[in-house]
Image (cartoon, rainbow, N blue to C red; front, side, top):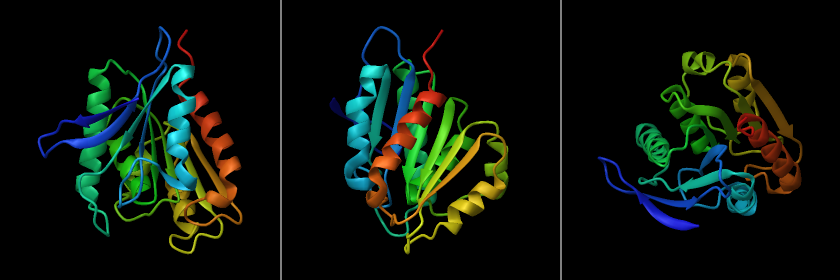
Length: 207
């Protein structure tokens, strides 16, 4: 693991890079949190656990921190940061990128996927809908889109993920985790299994 600064024309973006192990890389997962940024992610730091588990399977993990941390999160700035992270990964010769975002970050990864040709899959956790354009969601198909939301999320209710799901086409998948709040920590084990299975499918071993 190495703490790095992803360069961009708007300033450097803090990140943690966990390079894939082995001779052949399957790609990388780029993770972002909510409007307050950070590297850990929801469910008591599940991004850190992904960073521990995935590199030994040949999958790198880039945990990206947003430059601007305000509420509500700035849509254009967040999208810019994720696209800069994707560009940085491309310069590391990563050919396929899966995006995972929580809350505000969920909307950001959907937007970034629409604007990038190397995204192999999008996962939005407890996503907000501000910043998500219906036509952009429709155009993502057949790129896999995984939506996971807590059934007891009072901050951003599960109907928001249901709305995104209703717009999506081929490749869409929705899981409502009953009893889980916005952080999804109450169903962490189920979230872990869903994420590992999804990453394995969207970033399969190269032939």
